[in-house]
Structure formats: structure tokens, C-alpha cells
Length: 152
Length: 165
Image (spheres, each protein chain N blue to C red):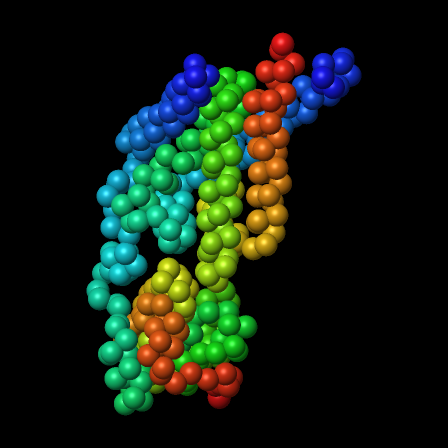
């Protein structure tokens, strides 16, 4: 296998660690403001008009902590398979929610990295999300395909 | 099989930790968020502004036909230019202090002021409503999702820009 040779193996391990690191930093950064201001974040979740009212507050309370926990686990490399899957699911849901609301012309705040009122969603938000989704795909690929092989 | 079980276990443990952390931090923090807060726009406005500040479309239409109300568009000027309720003045929230002076004379004369923006959760009209209410105007009403409900009823809209004298 190509990744078994020394320089390749080194390169892939390096890439895998960097990916984990970038995604973890992204999650830490994303969770910080929302953990501090849950009410403002709840307002944003509500403004997306996707979740039924009953789920708005519980999402605003738990989601930022889920991002934080994922950040910790990604850095630590702990429960990495589970973390990789949840990371993918989360990022895809975020992207779906943003595309859905952009396409129906809703002018709302992203609430992605902060609860401030000046961060409306746009095509740029989607591009940014695509970058992170690309990284999280690579994470899945590493965790489920590259790493098990390189251990053999 | 063992591996799938392991992954499912990890999945639920991670989500479980997030739940426990989120809910316990929320429980102990000073201004905790109630879990079953009512999220309708009307409820929120009522709790923020006290009196019944919402006007429904039927009432708004009546005031419009009798020409008794002044309509104010709280959206950015570029949206106002695309279309607005016929006769509405533009008072975009993003530069409200400056723009307020331009149309203040008309606001003072108005018997009733109906503020609107667009979209069920658009907050511009709420901010503007609060602003005017705090400035001492009592006759303020907000038409939620204004332009959309107005168009759905095929009530008159226009693109003409109204310049106040």
C-alpha cells in the first residue's frame, strides 16, 4: 500500500493531525460566544425557522457544548470515530440549514461563529462551510480507511 | 459488528456529555434559559413592550383605506426602493437617528403609525417600534411580516420613492 512507505505514512499522519486540529479550533471558536450568550443564540436558532418552537431553546443550550466537547475530543484524539461522524453530521446540517434559508430568501444572521447581529448568511458562508466539510470528509477517510490500514 | 457497536456507543456518549454539560451549566448560570419558552413573535414583542403593539392585517388595511395611518418601512433603503406599501415612508433601522429627523414632522402629525418590515422573524420593525415608543410616541403599531402579508392580500404597493418635505 502506498501509505505504508515511510514518507507517505508520515505525510498522512501529519495531515490527519492538522485536520483534527483545525476542526477542533473551529469548534472551540464557534462554541465560545454561544456558550456565553445562550439567549442571543436561541434567537438565532429561532430565526432559522426550521426547528419547532419546543426544540429551539434546548438546541441553543446543548449545541454549543456539543461543539466544545467535539473540540476537546478532536484535539485529544479520544473517541475519534464517534467524533468524526458527529462532526460530519453537524457540518452537513449547518450547510443544509444555510442553503435552505438562502434559497427561500430569508435574511437572517448566521450564528455560526458569533451571536452578533452583523453576520448575515451569504454564498461566502456556504463556501466557508464547504471548506470545513471537506476537512471533515478527510477526517472520516483517515479515521476509517487510512489509519486502520496503516496499523496493519 | 463490534466496531459498529463501539462507534454507536461513542456517538451517544459524546452527545450525552454535551447534554449534561449544557443543561447543568444552564441550570446553574445566573440568567438561565427556560426550556419551554414560547417563541412566537407576538409573545416576544408583548413581553418586551408590555402593551399590545401588534396590529393585524385587517386593522392595518382599514387604517390604510381610510388614510388614517402612516406606514413606515424599517428595512434598508435598497429594499424600500424595490417595493413598499403604497405611501409608506422609509426609516431604515440601520441609520435611524439620522433618518428620523428627515421624516419627524410627518411622524408627529400621524394619528397612528404602522411599522413593518418583511419576514416572520424580521426584527427591524421591532427595534424601530421600541425606539419610537421610547421616544414618547404612543400610537405605534407593528405589522408582523408586513410586506409579505400585504402582497398576499394584493393591497397596493409601489416603487416610487417618497421624499418628505
